[in-house]
Amino acid sequence: MLNLYWFLPLVLLSSLIGTAGLRRYALLNSLIDIPNARSSHVLPTPRGGGVAIVFSYLLGALFLALTGLVAWNVTWGIVIPGALVAVVGFLDDHGHIPARWRLLGHFTAAILGMYLLKGLPEIYFFGIAVDFGWAGYLLGCVYLVWMLNLYNFMDGIDGLASMQAIFVCLGGALLYVLCAHSSFVWGPITLALAAAGFLYWNFPPARIFMGDAGSGFLGITLGFLSLQAAWVNPVLFWGWLILLGVFIVDATCTLLVRLFKGDKVYEAHRSHAYQFASRQYRSHSVVSWSVTAINLVWLLPIAALVTLGKVDGFAGLLIAYAPLTLVALRFKAGQREN
Image (cartoon, rainbow, N blue to C red; front, side):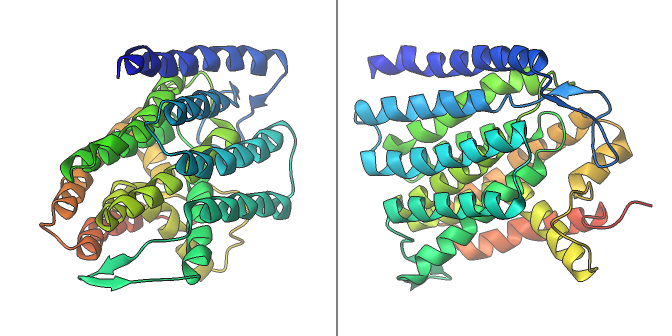
């Protein structure tokens, strides 16, 4: 445990200093995000800072495995797919990669991860255990690919994606403590610290953006952490899904509305609820802090009740997501701009 006193601050400092170095690299190499009609920002800003999150967390994950705090099979199940997704995102940040090749890389990473994590455990629906068997591998792959892509979609305003990652990870660590599995908190805490180092530079007004390497990595890693939690205790899976609620609901509602309206869902847009909200309030900070408030006041208590066995997991998910869906539709998720 003494090693943690220097290890945890080192993860934070590594991300903080690494982001500063990546910002300088981006400026020297003209790796700049230029605002366009689909952007939610107005000033040219360096991008690619999320690579610092990737390196800080991967090194941290290897340290946790070497010290026995995290099992090696879990570590490889997160490190290998996450690194692959980060490489695909890094290449896309530096030069466009066709969508079909990006998707191939995403599914390859998800397949590797599901193989290393050995599929899905039993999931309980209203007290009934469902064993997905081999279908669990397929469902898990689809879930992970959707998670990494939706995180990319939701990384559109300053501070939002990194603040969400910090909340979900610290909230997930709290859920482990509540169900007496506190030995599993170190993975989520490490990722929260890596995201916090980047947030210093990305907090509104952002001095650097995350880029696809960082957002895709965060999405698939949070997905894997939620699946790992399911293996520890099936009820934790529902808890993690509830913590991820704002991102899952906004991205999913936006996709479904655009599909229903016949829009080309593979084309870039800025019709997510959080994007409409940032334009309505003319502030990225207001929206990012509002999402954090919703997480703390609404989603975290429900996730805690589910973890403590006070509310059924699936019922808790429905309760948590219902008002989020109404809010997303209220802010015109998926609608075209006037």
